[in-house]
Image (cartoon, rainbow, N blue to C red; front, top):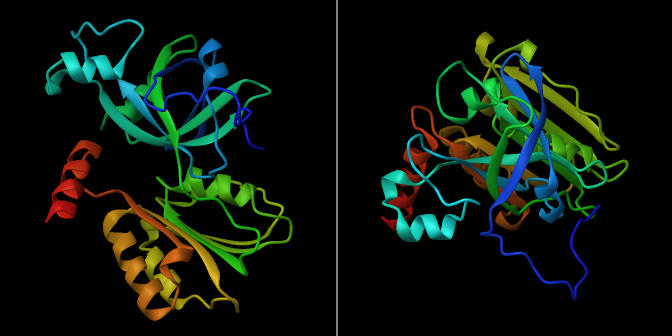
Length: 273
């Protein structure tokens, strides 16, 4: 269901900060924490029709006195770069405008990083801010079949896509996670062949896809996750499987050994090379 305003309503500036209040947290799996938020600020949040809708969550730095309410345009104009809030990009797991809830799933591996530890300790009533949403993908009903590939970082977007498949749509889904306890139940009106790959057992998503028998017809593909894995899958799908670029949504969400800030810098350098 689209939450877009009527065509004659003023459009909200996507650079405008949305401030939400944590309602509750849920431990979905041992390493996946769902933060469910709401509050008055959610009334101004404009959802979109993308199942990979993403937001940029803002984490203010300790000791920095930011304007209130938080204004990122003012921060970028008036503050040195090393005082800007940390920014982490996350898929919206779901947005329920009736219940006035928005959920984001965070991968948590101990005290490493910014967002995971925050999600593990944040308490109901805490306010936080974000920008967005953006997005670019949703299952197309006219597709012959659907291919969705990714790791834990892409699982929220893959889950949302599977849940929004048209009734009877054929989909093959492969998700790489740490182990069996990181699997999640995903319901769908479609006909879904879901396969979990466990890194703890030496499993490889790329190897599974290479050995996979594809259904007949042309797929619409969604491939997201760790950058080196995505690079291999891109080459395989385009060069060996004949998937056309216009039917492929593909992106590296992260790169092993790099923070999101570091990965963003590397991508910028590579694109400018």
